[in-house]
Length: 362
Ligand SMILES: [Zn+2]
Image (cartoon, rainbow, N blue to C red):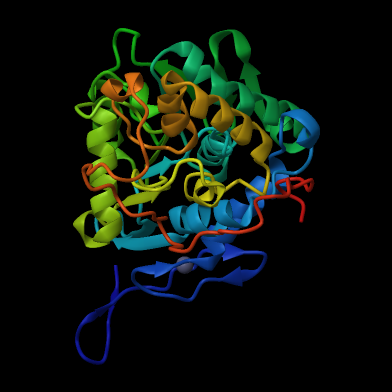
C-alpha cells in the first residue's frame, strides 16, 4: 500500500511502530529500534528470574542476550506486501549454546512475549520438546514468571495441571506439545519455543509446527539446543544449515542463527576456549562447575564426550565415547570456526573470577 514517489516507483510507508511516544520513521527493510526496545523492555519490566539467588529480580537481559539475540530477532523487520504491513524479518530462530547458559529463561520470556507482547488475537504459542517433561521445563519457568509478576498475573491464567497459560483478553494461549504424543497436526502457531532440538528423533514435530505457521502474519519459531552426538540427526542437519546461513544470510533471510561452539581442534582443557560456547561465563555462569567437570573428564575418557558435548557444545560422536580425543596431532573433519550470529569476537580473558553480580541488574 505504498505511494508513488517522484520517480514513479512505489514508496513504502513509514514503519510507524511507536514506543514511549517515539515513532519509527524508517521505510522498507530496517532494524526497528522501537520494536527491539519493546521486547527488551517487556523482559526487564514484566519478567523476573526464577531461580537461586537471582529469583524474583527483574530479568534484565545480559548484553550478549540483548544485542546478539533479542534485538535482531525482534527488531529486524521487512515489508510484507501480502499483509500490507511491516512484519518481523525472522520467522525461525536457532540458538545453540552449551548447557547452563540461560536458554530456558530466554525461551520462557520469548513465549510470554509472543503470547501477550505481540498483541495478537487468538495467538497459539507452543512449547515443544521430546516429551512433556522436557517441554515443561520452559513452561514451568514461564508460569513462575507469570506468578511473580503483578502485571502478568493480573492478565494471564496459569493452569499448571494441563500446562497451559491463557490470555482470555485475546483468546490466546501457550501450551506444551511433546514429540512423543500422538496427533501433532492441526496447530496454527503464532509462536513456538522449541527446547533441546538435539533430542528430536526426526523432523515431524518441527515440520508440523513450521507448516502450521503459514497463515499467521508474523509467526516466530525459536529453537534452543545443545549439540547432539548423532551426525545423521535432524538437529545436526539444522545446525549445518544454520552455520551456512551465518556465512551467507541471503541463503535464508527469514532465518536467524546464533551458534556458539568450541572448535573441535581447540584445546578442550584451556579455559580461554570455554567462552566460545559459554557466553554466560563471567556473567551468570560459574566457572567452578566447568573446572570440576573438566578435571573429571581429563581423568576419565568416558566423561570427556559429555564435557565436549554439553559444556563445549561440540557435535561429538558416540564412537568417541570410548577413547579420549587429543586436541592436537590427529586430523579430523573441519569444524566450524567459532562464531556468533552478530558478534564475531570472544571474551578471552577474565575467566578467573566468578561473577557475583546478577545476570540482569548491572
Ligand atoms: Zn521500524
